Length: 630
Figure 1 (cartoon, helix red, strand yellow):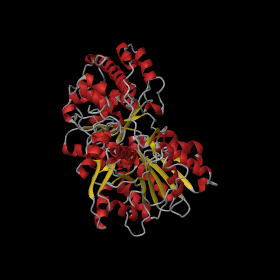
Figure 2 (cartoon, one colour; figure 1 turned 30 degrees about the vertical axis):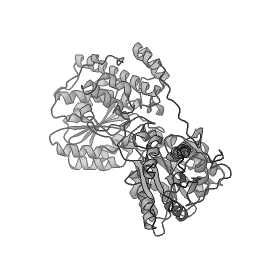
Figure 3 (cartoon, rainbow, N blue to C red; figure 1 turned 45 degrees about the horizontal axis):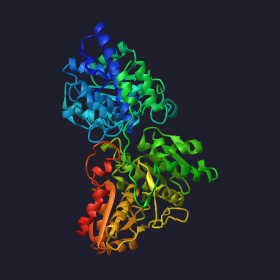
Figure 4 (cartoon, rainbow, N blue to C red; figure 1 turned 135 degrees about the vertical axis):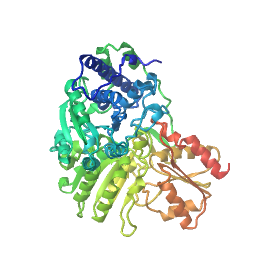
């Protein structure tokens, strides 16, 4: 299948640093290239949306003019380092399109954006053979890396693309001070579109201004209209020839010219297919429209034994449950502060903003600050700080967690997108080091890590622990999870269920051994237990909703059985598996033991991530048979 927009019409440009302005022919070609690239981004990100893969259209669409101008200077001047470093990973669509235009990939590859095993992930991951020369990691993490690139390439000008969102991260302040002190030749091109996932920075972060901030650090800073091509060209050229670090703050609306998402936070994510159809129809791209109108094939729905077809997303339910708790309190704003890090819709905190606005703060993209604010608020008895973000970003707040513990803070932290299930953004967003939060000394430590199996257990846990002192970490997945059933076919965590702190739960009894699991792997393991039962293998299943506390009675039960297998999607180097085996040995238990978890880089896609790690149900059955030698 051919890419339906003719990319052979693209004409690479070469600019000289001696030219102050665009020549008329260059400008005509540049504008034609900009339209071609933007139309293509709208198309193939929308195509990914038809497959349920997401795609993040707006940011990549925005920065096309400055990236193509920078590309022209890279191609026309050896002094310009030829990599489009970008600290805002969700603009990756333009990285893949440029890889095509620069001859590293075929245009047809773009039809498989974000699909499994296609190498077109939701954030850039370094693969030089295919035209991607850096890994962006998490938002706002590139500048210091780029400083190092500049140090290793003296005499070169290194570009970094950023935004008013990514620049909110505190590590950029450190990078700015270093770049100025070392007089590094950096050109920062910052898309200032006044949009992040959860709102508009000028509204929720008043006082934050890129020009003033970077000027205060000592950079040479210009601001310009990003859609005024002549002004943009002149500003970028001036920044390149400036000695030392220089920035161009490029102002425009998000997804300018795209009806329905222009200037709106929803422009950050993938364009709705109907709006893409309208846009491409108006541009005359009939073949692209026809391809978007094709109905994608439906994947077969997997039915899991032992759980309901019905699912719920714990990451969303978290906010609903907390809202109910808050609404039952008198003057909740005196006792609770909820600090969001621009991910309210992904962590369920938008429900709190809508239902209990007095306790809610949009803290911007500043995870370290926001966790500590929540901890500071909760540093006296009777007060609670609530914090939410992705589990991958837990690694960013380890020092702040230690500070909170030293200050005897009460924090209820929700880390969504744990594990790898349905993880569209691939390796850099894997939330696989959750146990890093349990980093205090054992004496007096009240830290607890909770990973509920379904939404009913989540409600029971939150209701029980809401007023507990200390640090409580609640983990959820990006994906939905079904409700666990008991052997009578009733919901295990239904109305009669009472959460018992620090206790494991027997989901199924077994004489041949036990699987120990939690979270999104519990229902998968239950399916395997039921399948093996039909084969004559009677395994038990243990749910461990409190990850970092030993249940001595349950450990004795498992340790006295023939086999124990821990199954999780946490990192095999840092997860429950390496701890559980040690707990058994310390108490003199020696069942046949093994553990499974995440151990490989991702390969894109969504539901494919878990089987790729060897955690699919077929692989689990084979692992059990191997341990039992059957």
